[in-house]
Length: 186
Image (tube, rainbow, N blue to C red; front, side, top):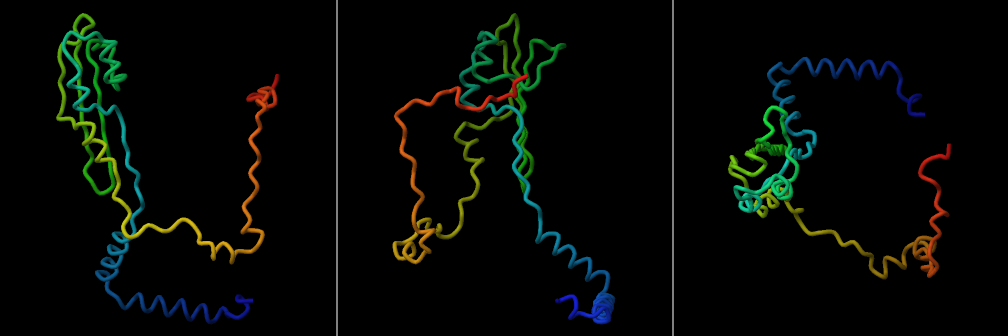
């Protein structure tokens, strides 16, 4: 119905008017408006956390002479291990956040005869400091109320106001063979 009300002539006149008005502004004005729009509307970018987080507490626990297995228990599996440098494990961590400079930390553990010889590490945060950097800003303003008043519940239609009946918990154990198989039988 709306398409019938708008004639092609009106569409042409409206398009010509918009083009003529756009021609009145200078290129500099258009570029400034484009820049404003680009800064006002930016896509959401998620935080990217990659690698092994090594905290100050973990490094404080390590002592020269510890076996490889114990170091792996404390720090986890190394991000980088090399066939050519079998006595060296590299733990690398990067954090990229929207609107902030990327952070990067590196910890290198050296072994000699399968025991910890020395550690080379960047300045690493404590566990508490690291966790505090992951928290996002709390929501601003009052939190919405998530429950309805009794009057609001009474105002609902009858089909919505009544809660769905909950099935009674069965005291009988469930037969595992009653579930469908995970893979089709061949």
